[in-house]
Length: 313
Ligand code: UDP
Ligand code: MG
Image (cartoon, rainbow, N blue to C red; front, side, top):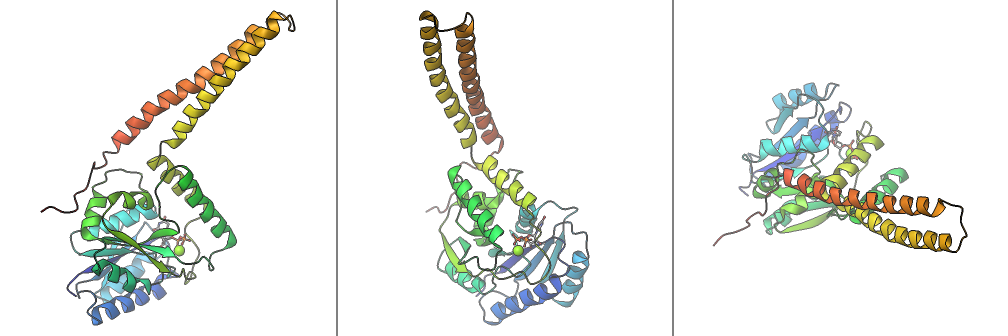
């Protein structure tokens, strides 16, 4: 096939794993090229996300030994999502299709064949979906399930059990890069791109070496980014709460006035209760209304494309 594939691999402090995973990726790519599955201009792009260990030196070393290996070094750690965008930007004009994969061997390279097959069948986006989570710790399993449920609750469109192992055609990558926003959450953005897409199941392997670079704090940050970047539902919930409290406060006011008329209260109680109920409701409702406008401003500032053209005849 004459299609050029760029595999984009983010790297952050991975000196333990790179000496094993770079040769494995090279072997996979040379196998694909050998079988004429992709062109011999295909490359591996390792994006060093500001590693503090010797990861970059290792990448440089391999780039001298193996023509397939390219390296891009970011000036400092900007996080996994930004590293992926940097790699996609680098690759967009150089290839026909890209695959993003973690550098720790967890994303089974065997799935690449199925992904390319789906691409050849006309899909622009192929999502790698985990078939099981046997190799994850029970904490990771539980937190991941909670994460996807939370996303659904807040109305963020995401592919269940899909991380960032995916194939994208170059036109899908270019469409994705036309989203100007700074706070990136690719798992939410890619479905917005559209085009024909499908999923490919793969087995999540154990990390080849080293430890996860995604501690709980980074996972929470990603989840918050996903929710606040894609959904104004939290603001809607405040408005809903405001309406509920306002209705309840009217009942509270009527109740306190009736008790006052019946002489069942001490002087001043009814007016105090009525004022507190009234103000509580009004304040929450006003916050919700203001929030609605802030939500609109927020979405406007993203300058997302209003549509993406798939075809013209
Ligand atoms: N990574 C990165 N920048 C970061 C954190 C992670 O580029 O700030 C890379 C990391 O080197 C790996 C991928 O993102 O290639 C996924 O990270 P990891 O495997 O640690 O996450 P997990 O699989 O445990 O969720
Ligand atoms: Mg991993």
